[in-house]
Amino acid sequence: MDVRGIETPLLAWSGDCLVIGLFENGVELTGDLAELDQKLAGTLTELIAEAEFKGKEGSSAVARVGSGSSIRKVAVVGLGQANALSLDTLRRAVAVAVRLAKKERCKTLGLSLPVYQDAAATAQTLTEGIELTLHQDTRFKSDNEDKGSKLEQIDLLGVGDQTEAITRARQICLGVILARELVSAPANIVTPLTMADTAEAIAREYGLELEILEKEDCEKRGMGAFLGVAQASDLPPKFIHLTYKPAGTARKKVAIIGKGLTFDSGGLNIKGAGSGIEMMKTDMGGAAATLGAAKAIGLLKPDVEVHFISAVTENMISGRAMHPGDILTASNGKTIEVNNTDAEGRLTLADALVFTEQLGVDAIVDLATLTGACVVALGDDIAGLWTADDNLANQITAAAAAAGEKIWRMPMEDKYFEGLKSVVADMKNTGPRAGGAITAALFLKQFVKETPWAHLDIAGPVWTDKENGYNNPGGTGYPVRTLVNWVLS
Ligand code: BES
Ligand code: MN
Ligand code: ZN
Image (spheres, rainbow, N blue to C red):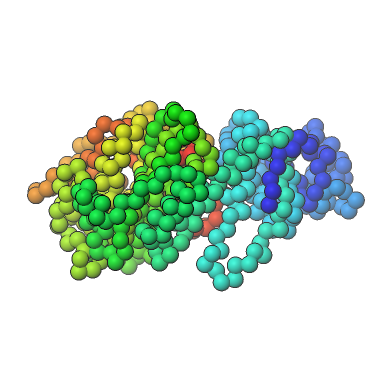
């Protein structure tokens, strides 16, 4: 499937299906649209009236065009209110158009949508929407022959030649798709070993540096918190550190850390029935996004040094498992009473944060499917953002907005650290139920000294059960696009 930007106006395009974006309260046809309607013998007017099309976001209608015309079908998609137009409106509108074109078995699709910001940003965004909608993961279906899309050519009308923007979008989407596929694959396929293999493939293909700390290396560094979580698994833990270095001097130096639990059973505080234990293959969503971002950055080659880090393991049970109440010592010397073995992500992140700060980067962002409490607070679509640094908060919020990945800043309420006070150690790993996503963030904060740092709890948005805009059921690849925007900013 090929995407290209062309200058061709609406009236001159020929192909299987022409899709026109219309705003709410903007469905009366004027100018070019009136001319097109005339050329199509009133088909557009009829379609809008018959379908009672009002331009609402997510709505669409399609009609056949009489023979003798240079287009076979014409469709309208709703864009919502004109003053609420954003890059993500375009991404979601194009998803509606692509799904419609697939259903109508079109080979060629012409898209006439408004330009937002500029033609390049619009072309990039539309291409992202197209690629992400068309990506369907059938790796684990026995009958996975592609009977779906017949789409061969998609033309973005009126944006001119946008080869660069389209290439950029495709590179970013390769990162998003890698993250989606890592999250969707089950824990018997994606293991600490295969995560390390994936990092190795990225390093090889895009020229990144790779350092893998084996269990013994982690022991030497005193990573007792990470190793405590890993100790019951039959699979060896892998501490992954990928580095992208630009050809010239780096404008800034940043690090991205992802929680990498390829499966979270809960440990001896085992997850019970109804806990969603069967979804805990997604508990490496942070690491998946980290590797996805590494792939995209390796392709985009910005003038920024980026470190990609993940302490990857499973949280399992066996005779070697941590006992609830065990005391671990992290690599910064702090002691932790593990009052709940299911609060394991923060233990792995503790040692990853200490390791990362020693790299001397300008800023650190971590991504973690850390708490069910964050999902209770913000639902399935929105990630929580914690940082004491307003500047970093603004950077990430802007990057997420442009990406169309929803995020909400949450309070770093230091007083709640009281909930993590331990009788025997420096801290417990688990606080009370109330404010559980906040105490998780405060726990992580104990392992960062002075580097600007932000924590993203992505437990909700890494996965979707339903079709949702340009996301298909499965891993979403959240928040690879935000990370890429942030690195480039
Ligand atoms: N991986 C889970 C968090 C999670 C829950 C992610 C639901 C996605 C969906 C995490 O390791 C966990 O088990 N957290 C516990 C913390 C509790 C023991 C303090 C939780 O949220 O229940
Ligand atoms: Mn857990
Ligand atoms: Zn977990």
